[in-house]
Image (tube, rainbow, N blue to C red; front, side, top):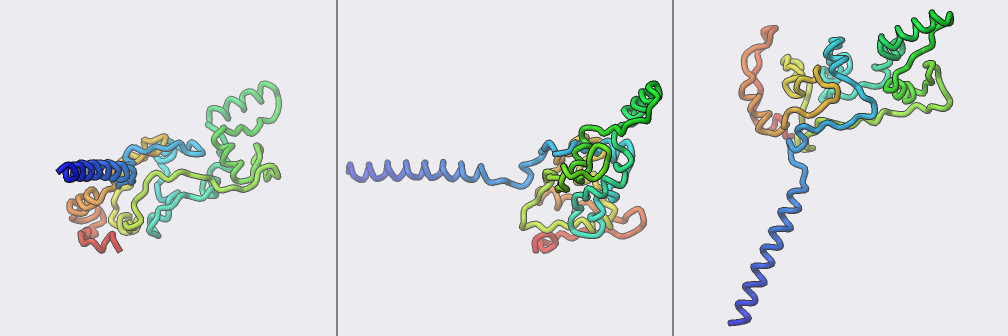
Length: 218
């Protein structure tokens, strides 16, 4: 009788410990949507509020891959340099230097903001935007914000073709100085959008998103 009671006690204790261990392990598994609100500090403080908001630069100018491939992609530094080979600081800082140079009767110096200095350094350029032996060309280690599991196949192309606004998934990106994940990106969230998004685009193209599993899981 004592042995049976001891066995039952040990068995119950084992079940409790196993359950606690399983709960702890599962809690460490990254689930879809767990990163909602994720807003990492990037190696260069790029502001979508300034570029996409105030300057109204189209999303596809920098993220052209969204129209032509599954992934929108991170723009190469050469895309940034299309503008920033000429724009190296804020207009206010440049005007201050121009005024100072005029007072001192000299040529204006090239003014480079702290964040753009990081871009130029990554491009192997010095403060005068000239090739520098001190700065090797290095990729910018941007931190990924939006991520989905490997078993999900998301393709940007049909969404762009259906004229789905970037903000539908990425939130009001044009208001963000630092990008954050707005949506849960869960399966239920995606399916709900597919159920509601029917009709026609502004160009009159019919929209009928599929709901079968193979659409995203293949």
